[in-house]
Length: 73
Image (cartoon, rainbow, N blue to C red):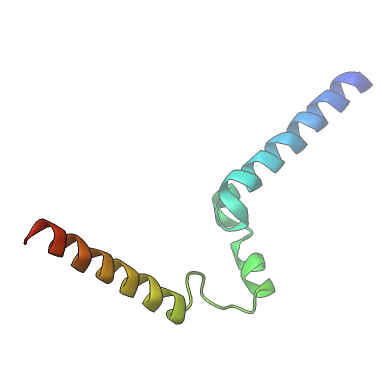
């Protein structure tokens, strides 16, 4: 009986670990831990900072301009 309980306990912990690893704390288990995980990072919104976002948009725009120059002589 102890072996069965031990194996089931291990399976539950593996499932919990995989669920959190694949979906993160915000998405795992329907988001019940989402409010706890946001308080750790100071409540700042997730995503790219504005400076990084501007640099990426500028690089994409530059690439589009270069591509159009090569396509339309």
